[in-house]
Length: 336
Image (cartoon, rainbow, N blue to C red; front, top):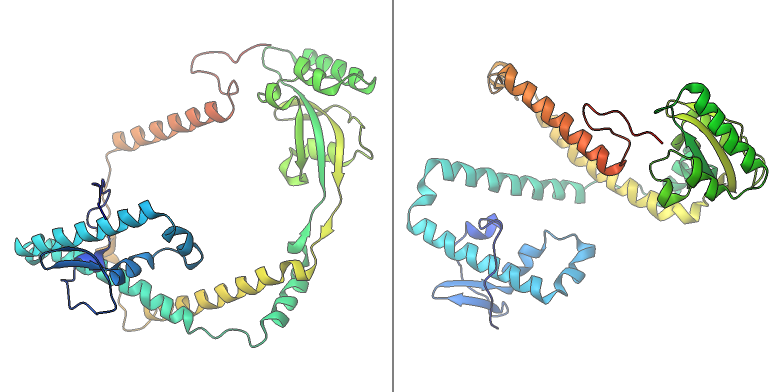
C-alpha cells in the first residue's frame, strides 16, 4: 500500500501510543507499517479506533481513506516519539509533567467507564420505565400546535396611528378573502417575508410572542383571521391554516428510550458518586487560598475591549440571522 503525505493537525495525538516503545509483535497481529524497529500493527489501529463510539465504528472503518490517515498518524507519532526520546525530550520536566497529565486523564476516563460498566441497574428495567412514563406523562405528550400565516407592521418610520391603520387595512382585505400570502408581501415588515410569504409553519404556544400566541390558539377553524394584537415588535394579525391537537405518545413507542436513559443515568450516577466521595473525603484538602491565587487580574481597558468585541460579534450575528432588523450604528432603521 502506498501512502500519501497527510497534514497532521495534532502530531502528538494518540498519546498512549506515542509514549510506548514498540514491543513484541504477536503472530496474529498483522503489521501495517514498519520502519526499522518502529512498527504499527492492527492492534494499534484497533486501540486508536476505540475512541469512536461503538455504533459508528463500522461506518468509520468502511472509509479507506480515513483508515490510511489513522495508520499514517499512528506511524508518524511513533516515529517522532522515538526520536523525541532519543533527543532526551522525555526527560524534560515540563514535558514529563504534561505527559503525566495526559496519561492520568486517559486512565481516569478508563476507570470512569469501568465504574459505569459495574453500575447496578434496575432488576426489571421495563417495569421501571413504565413507572417513569406514568409519573412524567406530560413529558411524553406532544402539546398542541397551530400552523399560521402572519403579518407584522412595526413602528419604524411610522406613528402608532399609521401602523394601526396599515395593519387594519391588511386585516380587512384578509377577512374579505384576498390571498394572505400576497397581503403579507405587500404589508408585512417581517424580515423573512420574501422567503416565507408570511407562513410561520406549525408553532407551539411557547414559541410565539404571548399576545400572538393567545390570538393564534384562540382561532376556532382553519381560515379564521385574528383581531389585531400588539407585541413588543409591533402590530400583528395571524390566520390559522392548520392545527394538531395534543397527543400522548404510547408507552411502546418511548419504552426503549426511557430504558436507555435510565441505564445511562444509573451508570453516570455510579461514577459521579465515587468522584464526589473522593472530593468530599476528610482526607481531601482544598487549598482555597492557593487556588484563588491562580486568578489573573485584567486591566480595566482590556475588559472593556473584550466587552466591545463581544457586543460587535453579537450584532454581526444578528445581521446575518435577521437582515434588515439591526440598523448600522448611527443610521436610522429602514423605512417602508
